[in-house]
Length: 270
Image (cartoon, rainbow, N blue to C red; front, side):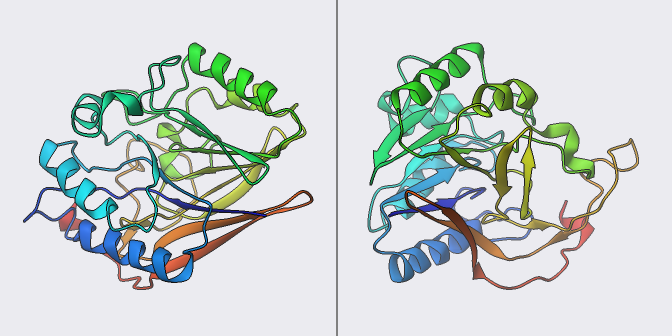
């Protein structure tokens, strides 16, 4: 049995700052305490990007101090709010995959392979997997042989029919074409959209977690100039993580809330 914990969208800011009225470090440390108390037996912890809100050095320094409170060191990757140069300067070049040049990882635990992909593109709110990353992913899937595979990345792979559909993984079709033919793919987990969604895209089962920051209230409809990503209402909570339980026959994803407040935040905070 594999027990995998996935967090996302921490949006840490320098000490003394708030992010849209929220103390994101306090929220993260509430989540860390939750994991340490409830899931000390986890085999792996992954944080799926948007580690910092604006990518400052002081934010990553603060993040590192908080992450040290986990009972085990988490695997990190980046999101669109992160600054890769500042991240690497603070966390070290060894976080970068030598083959892809991105913060990509492949970890084997309890008969499973967990692949963590860096979908961030500097200066771009949407995400992308470079050709070299897709080639690396293909090799990791081949090397996994008969192991069940779980993939974690920041950006969602499919449109959801909501105003934020303009900032998803731009080459989700290419990703799905690569992985859909692999019978060992169990699940793809993402953050980014600040809401809980699950579905199937081109035969690939996926979900997104609400994450540690504010939540976006699902508002159906395609993005337009009037209905942009900034149009949708945001809520203070929940603070949410995923608990993935997987064995030879089944993979189950539980969404667990470590903060359960759901107040609508004032538009003046955005």
